[in-house]
Length: 387
Image 1 (cartoon, one colour):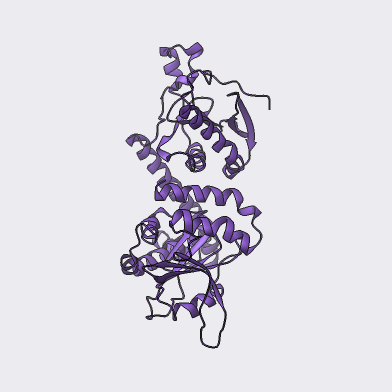
Image 2 (cartoon, rainbow, N blue to C red; image 1 turned 90 degrees about the horizontal axis):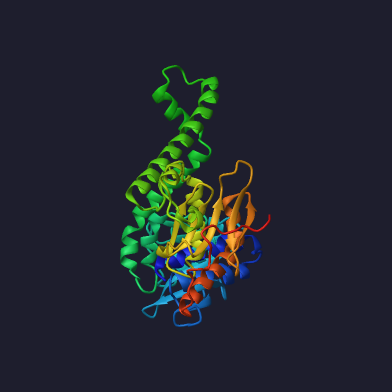
């Protein structure tokens, strides 16, 4: 798999399993070792590439260990310290990294809880690890802009000089983005004042502050929503997504006949929602552990949103039934090709069905490898099992 595909597979794993991880060792085994091995491409079982429990005497500190040291060119290049996944990362957790950084050749130090990865270097003072990370990777809130720099730390594309040269910009751009994100979640008095005084000519009194705090929050949420909708419209117009308003899904054809003019008119009522596209991305992230993500396609219909392998209506992976006002369902397919619907409350509930989704994809891949004909595997309208 390509770098982004491997990362997407790990993201799906983290989202599905993070609630079950209770210890630091479990965090290492379930998340950190797969990150080192699958995403970065180092052999965690080769001590010439990855040294677990790396020990170096530091001043009066004897026998302290850093969880992992990654070797490139016969030298320690990256140090990794792990904490349990349910703990938030704090700079206090990095005390061993600070000490080890000055006595090794490593220029990159990583503090992680298996979900968030904070990358440090020595921008402020040579051979002394900075207090703040230059790059933050959050697997539950992925920022795709940092992925090219992360890839430069992988075994196949290791380019330390390029990472270090870009680190200062990454550090401050990332920090500013996190400040903006925090202001969107909970705007400070200074932020509210700065925006209010640009649109309100009166005095910034306590009453005005209280009034405009709510207005600022509302305006920022609407701004984000508008930006998302604009990008969605652009994507649909550019053809990056299969469905569009008025697109026909042949799976709704009756008895396999071609859709009539009346059917086409009805299909103009189809509206693809952002929630359906987000659900599609989750299913795609899960399924791409088995096949290339380009093979996961989608089509929207009036009654459901279909996710298909190879854009083949005879290979349905899942269906999203999100049109009902009260209850949403995900439809999954068993060996008999019958659809079973499962209620979901939040989009994250889709990850509870990750194994079933992967098994469906494997089943189609197995049928293709054995030369089985899947053309009659699913009716045009797959019956649903009783709820």
